[in-house]
Image 1: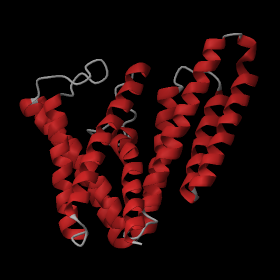
Image 2: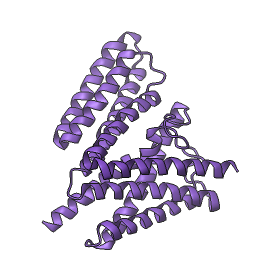
Image 3: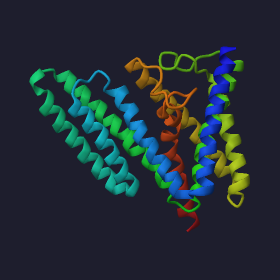
Image 4: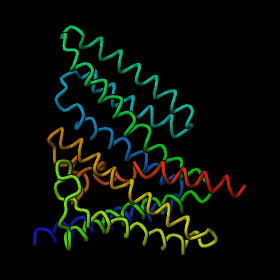
Length: 277
């Protein structure tokens, strides 16, 4: 009963999120979706701050990470070259702030650890979401964005269903105890089915094989995005990144797969654009 109640809660949350996306699609189109991505980054940065720096006492370090992660995202969303430059500048700023605020402790391992978490966090919530944002700037950007979400979310849902029904063999029990190989395979199947549906309704003029490849890659990489966030939470000893979405936890719990899959889909879009030009 608990398992199916959890599934029902997850399904309702997913449907609510889908309804919001459709509403934005019908009403504000690209601008509305960009606002949604930006909002997710702000909330996600706050959640990641709690995961990576929950034991950190320095308000300066926490504030710097939160602000700089948003600056990196804004620059990366505007331009990939600007994003890489601002990312480097943000890392230099974090290194400077950490050294100045904690050198008196004399704990070199602590300082190195904060630097590593900051670099990882700026990449995770600063750079990665910008690829999803930039998908919306491509030709047929909304359709590609829907394809991205459909491939990842369908894969996540089918992985859960297959795992509950026939899951036996664990994939990485030390990272995510409940995920199984059967669920993982089911997730790839779900992503493929979503890709076929999106191809039929939005990209029928394109070769189907391309969307099968992109769907499978998005589903596969998306699962590792889920594992990665699970690793961060396990190290931080937290169950969910937040509580904003019932059944899913926080925003990061919902978009972890999207973050990893978005650069894959954007790469596919750019390759297709180059081949057709």
